[in-house]
Length: 255
Image (spheres, rainbow, N blue to C red):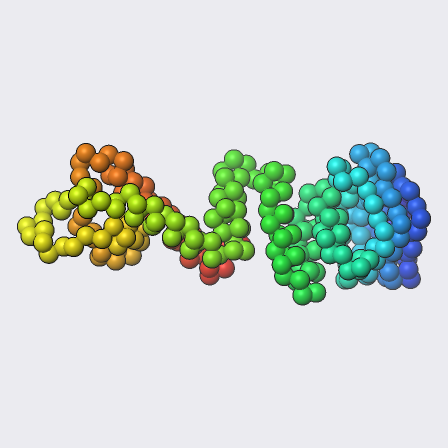
């Protein structure tokens, strides 16, 4: 079915149809575009092409397709409202997921879900878009590594509190590595009795070296503790890298 550049001032109703493809480039519907009991078959060669469409309202009362394919092309599709049977928002999200990758389609759906008061669904869709972007968005090697890091570190900025979890985990690991005071020494200190040792404060100071908390900064692992001496540099470097990223995420600079 070819509805390219079709302009309808009222409603468009597609009901009880089995389509190999629907081409509706630049279609404009001023009323409701309703899909009721529509099945898309042979989606590898057909599908539903709604590129650059302007639809005032989309109503979905039964739309099925092969979940192993990407039958929808939503590039540039503009709509004011969406309705789906039984308010099944997962069905709306499935449509975007089943479309050819297009960031604009995800952004439009995400904004719509937020406007309707479903921030959790919007965040889920945002995460899905970022996952697909890594595989289909042409990020390149460095961009993909950065994207993967943000996914696990702060869920692409949607879970900034994860930054504190990772910071706590690194400090805890350091506390374990430096737990034995007999394995620590105070080089170049005239009176060692002035400086008490705490593995937790020492680990915390290493991670927050960018701030320099002054706790335990005179201590260091003894020479024979090679792993502990290496971990000093690793933990300090992680602090220098992760603290600014965590601050940027919490402040909303990373999204």
